[in-house]
Amino acid sequence: MKDILYNGSRFLIYIAALSHLALSQIHIGIITKVFNPNSGFFLFSFTILGVVTAFSSSSVKKGSRIELFLLACVATEAMGFYFLRILIKDIQEANLLTFHDASLSIGLLVATMAAFIIGAILLLATGIAKDE
Image (cartoon, rainbow, N blue to C red; front, side, top):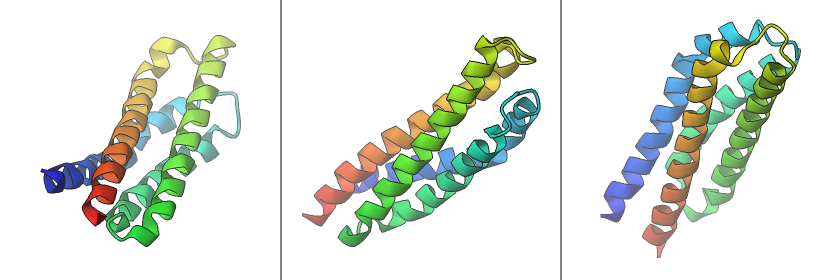
């Protein structure tokens, strides 16, 4: 059962990272309307760190790489949260972006962040238990 959860959590992280990478055109269409010039940097960082997190998830079995995976998870979530904050702030200031325009991007962003969190918790719980 632990192997199924372990592999399933890795699969969830891989799917979240690769689907976010594949659907990044939706976010790029939104950041052209965002007033904050740093939004592209945080979107790019979230996307790249998501892929790094996915690839570092395969090394959780080896106890020495858990810190790297945790660091990648925290950095990924921080960049995603900050990008989400930029979008929401721009919607509140009612510049060119409305919630209706950004709802798909925000939904995908929240779903990706949730998948990373759930996958990381399951992966760490089953990966650490697997080592014992």
